[in-house]
View 1 (cartoon, rainbow, N blue to C red):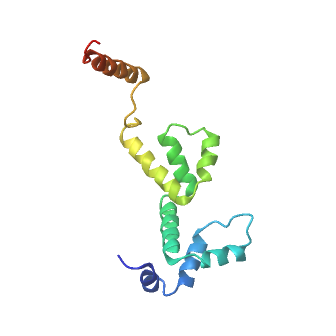
View 2: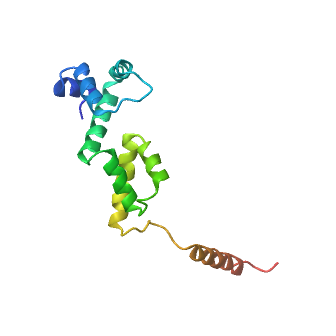
View 3: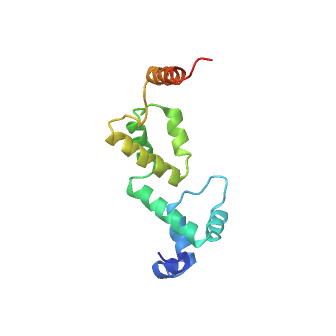
Length: 140
């Protein structure tokens, strides 16, 4: 793996060109001016800029934030949950991609969450464990 500086020089020629690419892909926060946002992006490290470029590219490749959120909601069978949709839309891109990967795994398992057992089963296991412990003791 190359150092971030070497990768930037090889792929983009300069950090400014990379910052321009990232600026085109990201949405500007509403409370920040365009110039301030561009200056803030230009001040980031090469590693962070490369990471932002990859995350933004991955989101774009999957169809955008709205589509990714829709797929997450569909995997959890909660398409009509507006509050959760708004919460997902507020997440950073990398967090959204992590949730998307987890939702795809959930779909592969048929909608079952791994390790999920009914509460009654947990209670019966606890009782059995307690009986075994008490049975092994010597009377005082």
